Image (cartoon, rainbow, N blue to C red; front, side):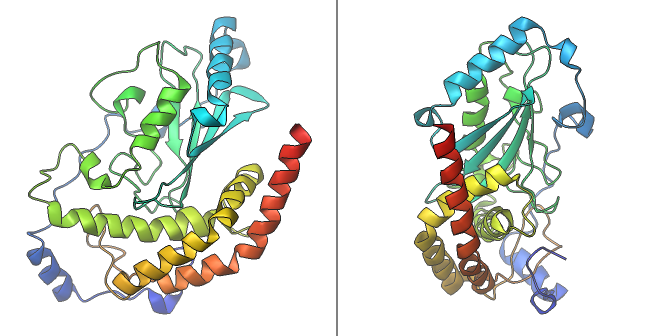
Length: 303
């Protein structure tokens, strides 16, 4: 069962109705291409352990230099960066979805690890925010967390160069959270499949609020580390009225209609339920305020 959805809301639309919808859309979307790396041990930052001794002085110095350049807030608008105090090679990004995109207000957690060969080889990156492996948030971001980008060596195209930095990786990730994510899919005929663009964006708007906002901030089920959840809460409290307004706007336009995910057109075709999401958002405000206060106290202690 999807997180945050009650049994009565998991309505399955009749097969005949779905078939009729597909016909109106010009048929099913084509099968999406698969990444050029398959096994998680080939790309996931936490599926392989590098010994500390394998990191030479020049590699460590380069990682630290990249982080120093990335830490000033003006160099990473729309994102927070969390170095690991116990492991120089391991970094976390928390990317915030920007206004006028389906990702607006979302908090997307990426795990990053620089290998011992860095910067000769690219870092490993995984999207952790996937609704426990159920949501494909972008043509480039798979349900299993695989991030499919040429700069990471997980897709064809312009490859990683030693002159690239951790900031280049962050900016490449942020660029995928755009106004029309469907256009990120290079293998699809965009004109032929234009009807699916809005359907996918609407699906992402719903799942962003459900998974990348509500689940992230819920202190009882959040997969975020405490420090990251508190930072997300700070942004949430600041923009709370925008979250409520966005839910209301989407509720009036979409509630009750079937959600259509072109990557899984036959499954999880439950109705949009921004009414329930709005209730969850309002219920999270008090705990988010406490987390935001804790974040402010931690930042003050670091100054």
